[in-house]
Length: 182
Ligand SMILES: Cc1cc2nc3c(=O)[nH]c(=O)nc-3n(C[C@H](O)[C@H](O)[C@H](O)COP(=O)(O)O)c2cc1C
Image 1: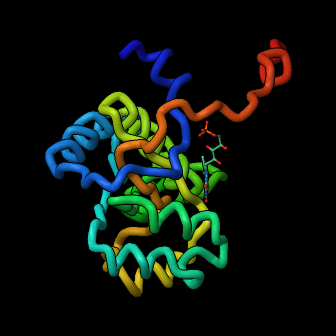
Image 2: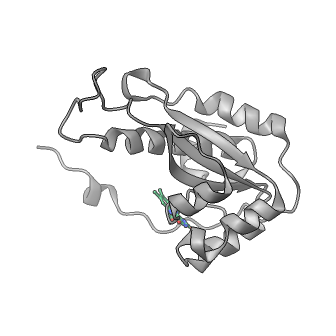
């Protein structure tokens, strides 16, 4: 798939077929996602795949979704949920633990975001649908799925084969609204 076509075609998918996603396909997606750029090539993103229905139901509970029922519906519908985590204290940090820039630890989430988009684009190319979710209670999620002490949760990404690939793109701003030359 052409890169620009892939970027433009990828949609947030919230309805999935019941088919399970083969582990090998998820490995192929991460094999691509690992080429995402990162702060000093620290490569802090990690991926935890959850397929157990009971665990997915718990992740979809109002405690975890902060009561955002839209995300509950999406998660209950997904054959797999990816927890995108990141290693803390590396991206944006000096070796002595001090921040490198005034953005402090903001670069951790920046790297997690780049990883998330790279993961979703790779998944799209392989026929999988994804949606990046930012509305969750990290502590509650940690009660259900063990997240290593030195990692934090960056995003939750339900993944599966899309029920419908013809999802219309939400409107985009025009180039003139986004770009200026100074
Ligand atoms: C950081 C971030 C957080 C998001 N959180 C959610 C979410 O909690 N639930 C959801 O359904 N979609 C979520 N989205 C998906 C956006 O709604 C979606 O990307 C946007 O509407 C554009 O649609 P598209 O991805 O199909 O182009 C999130 C996207 C990003 C980048």
